[in-house]
Length: 216
Image 1: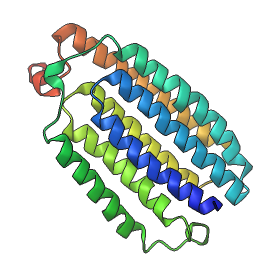
Image 2: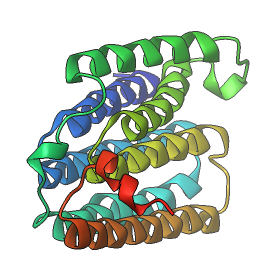
Image 3: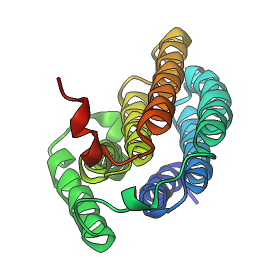
């Protein structure tokens, strides 16, 4: 299997794991699936490092493994394992329709990135499409899910999509850039997890539609 084919296949696997993260009922299961997706992202980084001869991406891979595969899922698992609200399961649209919209997003992203002409991306257009689609799928998760915890995962999916785009277009960026991104993601997840726990303990719900009483 050539390097470009491997990267394209791994990118497709990222989309599959995104669907699984959104469809999972338990937040702890979603955390594990997010860790799996992040591991796939690390595999893409390693493949791109070899393909582009970019040693910076090897450092990115180490940083992403520590933060995205280990720390962030562990933080979410420990924070979310005691929170449950069956009434908040599901979203404003059905899971089946959500999957159809996500598939349409990937297709539109492919056509949107088709005109992009960059020598190093000639054989990696599907990966660029996946990175854009992945970001939009995360945004779709945020706006369509009623459960606060699912919205946190939506943010994490968006961040992974943005991270993949950066690896494709700025793979020679200094390792400090990657450290800054990773640190930002960790603190964002910690803050959102603390807010979710506070809301759950105060209002005994994870349903964003029931937080209208917080207005004013």
